[in-house]
Image 1 (tube, rainbow, N blue to C red):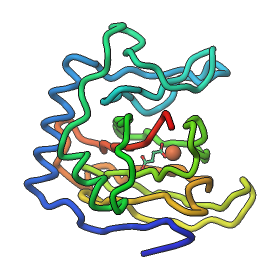
Image 2 (image 1 turned 135 degrees about the horizontal axis):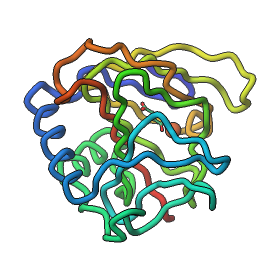
Image 3 (image 1 turned 90 degrees about the horizontal axis):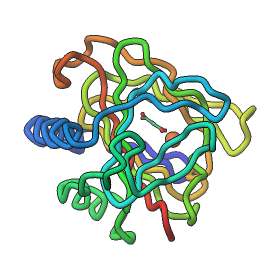
Length: 199
Ligand code: SIN
Ligand code: FE2
């Protein structure tokens, strides 16, 4: 599926590849534990997050931003997995590699409100997202918050890319279909968002 530069590559990652990614991300989360960020207005996000790579996206009372260290451990984020760099190379057509992978863990009931990705220095660099585990009901709108939107189901192994005009489009996760996959230990969904934070 393609829409204004948004691309959904269904089934991009096979079952073995999905299992390997989950294992790798959960191992990294031993060193860089999942935590719940506070929005700038002080509300805890419903997703749990950590990051891989040189920069991690985070938020607290000081606002949305990228940081080189984990907010709790104060240690650099674990390295970006090579498998993710390979996916990026294939599905972005060889764009400059990402320096950030945000890991979102959606346990039952977690969701992500409508937003744009706009904390990166170069807002023309694509965003690549990997879905693992439970299916997400993803919402893709337009450049303005009030624009009409469409629903896209993201299932385990899907890769999606926000490029072109869609790079600046509003998007979010309305809900997770709990129990639709058994991939993630303890249930839920892991989303990996690869971005270039610094130009
Ligand atoms: C996000 O846009 O930050 C996350 C999208 C997703 O979980 O699929
Ligand atoms: Fe986003």
